[in-house]
Amino acid sequence: MRRRAEFLPYQPRTILNKHPRADHWFWVRYSAYPYLGCQHGCLFCYCRERKFCPHPDPADFAYSIRVKENAPALLRRALSRAPVDVIGLGDYQPAERRFQLSRQMLEVCLERGFPVLILTRSPLVLRDLDLLTALNARAPVVVAFSLVATPESAGYAGVRRMEHLAPALEKRWAAMAEVARAGLLTGTCCMPILPGLCDDDANLELLVRWTADHGGRFLLAGGLTLADQQRAFFFETLRAAFPDLSSLYTRLYPEGSYGAAGWPWPAIGRRLRALCQRAGISDRMPRPIIPGEKRALNKQVVERLANEVYALELAEAPEARRWEVRRAAWAIEDLAQDLGLFYRTFGRRGLEGLPGLSPDLAGTVAGWLAAGARPGDGA
Image 1: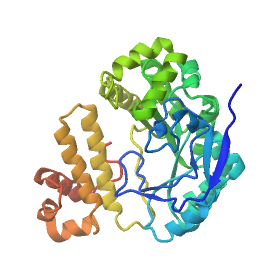
Image 2: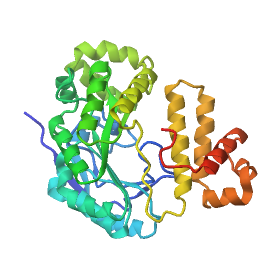
Image 3: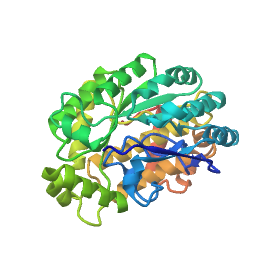
């Protein structure tokens, strides 16, 4: 008999997670989610790791859902004191139909003019398209859909079993098209690409084509990660439900590893980049720029540096070089002044004086500034 979900309302003291700086994938500075646990119950979900999962038994993650019933009020209070930046929001698991907390939190973001990033496996996000389009008129909104296969993919059946109770792929692709028609930035998040199920060339081509055909403007991709109790849960489930894949994953994810040790990720990333370029979309998400943002140029240059880090990863450049460029991005992200004014005042020497910005990268950034940096340059 199928286990039924239980809902456990409670009132946490805080809701807003504040990060030191925006991440270089989704450009999120804040995040706030109204539920702990997820009824979709995807077998590979990293949220079963101890640092994210509130249950000692990771199997409970999909069935014991903690509901933060005061989440909208907490968010309203927190955003009243926070500088405006992108917030990761929205949890459209089935519990949201009943509690509507994600919708109420979107209303708060609309009130405060905070840009929003929503990453979802559910077409339920369409219920809130009215709020999302209203917010997009004030501040950027991005809706990314978690999709690692299409209805035409050879691994379709296996992916659906891995995703457990997540809504059908067909409905998610249709939702992307509707979001795109509403004028919102949307795209595909292929995370994780699962070895043996959806990492073949045919599926990668389908993912890119379906993204472009459904109005998506970007496709992000990454591999599976496994840690602590999530790792044990995944392998136990894999042996029972996918015995034919068990030996492959055991080889790719040896004990003590976090990512896949023997999976050719850079080659897959390069393949996706070429396919995206051919289809007229990006393999990077453009950084949302808030209207009236005083440090917009800083953020544009950080985006360009982050894109360079990713290009170095795909080229399998030395790790030291990647970190050098990453630290340069952080240095400019942390700069309190407008980068253009700073450069006009202090010149290249001023850039060289920023902690984490090497002389050669200071020269590179100076060249961009002299030529006029634009969002997404270098992607």
